Length: 410
Ligand code: GCU
Image (cartoon, rainbow, N blue to C red; front, top):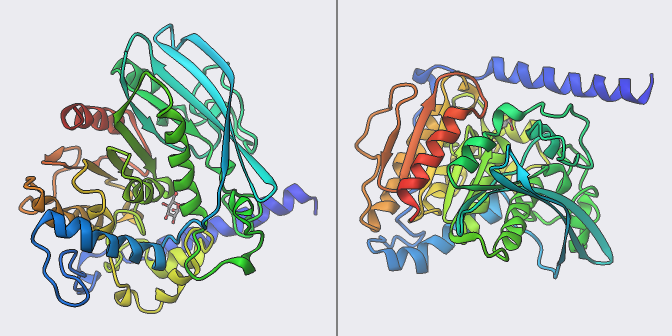
């Protein structure tokens, strides 16, 4: 068999086994099972956290470490040098509304380097603009029909293939900048691809060099979002106080993990992030921890797999990931037909995270019932909607994020 044929066959088998998993999953609320969530406001030695100071000094670092050690892993410690090269720029993009800039970022360490290509659109005539940082799935040129956009190195997809997911016109017309990169530039999204990632720059060249809590793909993609922010913060026309990290699906998990750690991001958006993103792990509904570990072992640190047999032994749950974003605005968006991502589980996590927002005297979603499809449920710093339709990013989603940010980020 030719190599391409073999790759297609393997990809096909992988997708088939995923859809079998999805079909066999539980979609009945009555079979979710009972569970007790770890309390974000109680320390392991029983101390009750009642003040935001104690949350920030004592409990927040504990929870952050639980996610590092048990789920996403940590990026190894090493000095990485970043160099930026503007490879293309125009002040006449998007029908004259935007400045387009394409920047090649080269990261070096341990005698090796890796390049990421970042596409940025900035509204013209805005002195200080808020910015969305959001990685893409198929390469920069698939996000738009703008012919000047340079194809990302790993892309095999048709130009503009995913343009419907990127409301660039609306974003820029609303006065926001947006920066995107192909996530493969940071970690090629497949099993056994550690060498095609940034990890070799940190001295990690093989799976054997990974500790139980070393990060893998999601940790690396989150790291990539932070590196884009480093660059954006060097630009005079970007508002440092209004930076947003947004991601869809596996990249929604990434956005949450990035925003939880990198507090320079002023707002965090999870679009259909599902299992190991915004959805509670302890609910047996749609995708579960054992199924995600089976299908995507390269996303999480190795330790995460040890919880597949006993999810309730996880020392944390995903509401605490959302709580790490407090007091910054957080938006969780689900899609009605995206049952695999457990919309209700995403909503319940956000409700429960409200406990921590309440320490900051913000109103929360704790007393709200599950909203109707397409209804905006926005209270204090927490925003939620369950859009009608499938697992996707649509203009409705972007419109919601922009309006929410307009109100919350000043
Ligand atoms: C799969 C996976 C999800 C993930 C999604 C995506 O469905 O099971 O966890 O969010 O892919 O990234 O599109």
